[in-house]
Length: 403
Image (tube, rainbow, N blue to C red; front, side, top):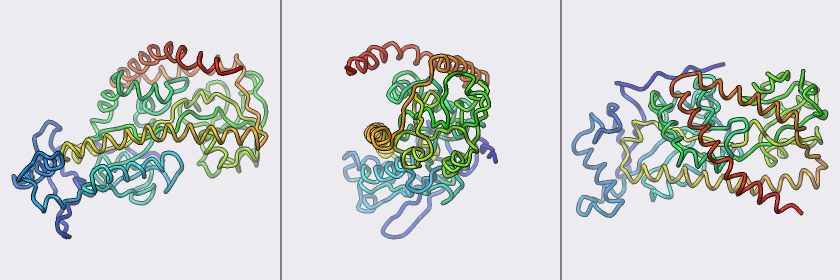
């Protein structure tokens, strides 16, 4: 079932500036939305505005006499809703760590309560919930909004697209962040990268792929743009939730399936039903997740707490890239060395067809709107700029490591 995006949050009350605790009592501050350039939200009293300003200045050691004991004890409480089950390895853990880091970096002045999928809203309603202010923050994959915002997929994973560190480079240095903000701005949402689970495997197959003919009629669990690529090459993409994938391979409902990387796939038990795993994961070379922030709530924070949120998300991105590489390397060793899994590369004719078809599928996204056209152009420029350096710095070095 598809969920409609909430309309842009304009000229209406927005929940979500948080609960402010003072001396054990609760007082909820409600005010109208303002533009991001406003000096303070309309509807807030002068005393309240001075209090917020004092809170920010005191944390920087600049407030002097404005830092009263009451302000020193103020705690801002937010909610984060996610698309992940509780403690979901990878992105679910990233969401939890972001909340913990915000509390730690803010010295307890800001706390974010985590609600896994279904805890406050359904997973498919996370974008709308943050847009409407039901929760101040959300954690998801941009790919989840692909049906409603096709260009969002550029901020997640693109077939034969940017690798994790290249993706961060595009966001931070190549203009990607500004385009992402522009895409979500009509919905009152500020996006940040919120982790990265790294590249995926190409898939687990019940029979070998020797040529393009072997893809025709293949029933494969592959979602997103990769699934569309497979469909155009004659396969039949099937969408199944994670818990049903391995049983579907066992029963013959599926001929092949992809999920995530070595660690997650091994935990799911793919190696128990198939000993044939193909690489590379052309469909998802990057596993970026996102943190969604209600723009009005964000604008109402003092500058130092805005910085805390940004820092927490950046820290998690670095942490998760390192963690996924470390754990996936060990899981890959176990799959091959202990479980008897055979890793195979897709044959060159198949890879060439996958790449050509992927280019067509990705290019079609540019026709879905003005912002999408600009995002596509920026992404391709980054890909063309970064690839030669990655060839020299990474591929040649990796070739040199091989005896």
